[in-house]
Length: 119
Image (tube, rainbow, N blue to C red; front, side, top):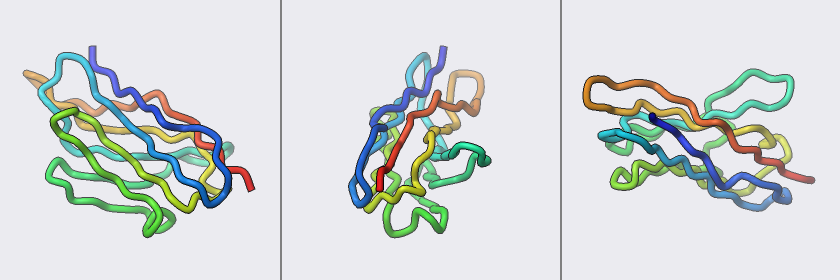
């Protein structure tokens, strides 16, 4: 069974930093394209950042200059370093990834991790 397990969320003051991790586990060969999304209360889920297996990145305008997505292919883990956090960054953050298995590549979502930024 494949799982994406997120960690690193929490409560932080405005201007602070958090580092989210997303580890893929199970009977897998690796992780291809991956990304982080977030959903604030009453709002739709939105893209934060994506990264290809080769390391090419893409960011939402709200994340540019403050967030950095990275990955460790040997650990099947994707990270999101968040700096200069603002109260409007408060949301549940979800990891999404294309996970390669023996016979197929399947898209998975993590369970989400709460990030709360206080003013």
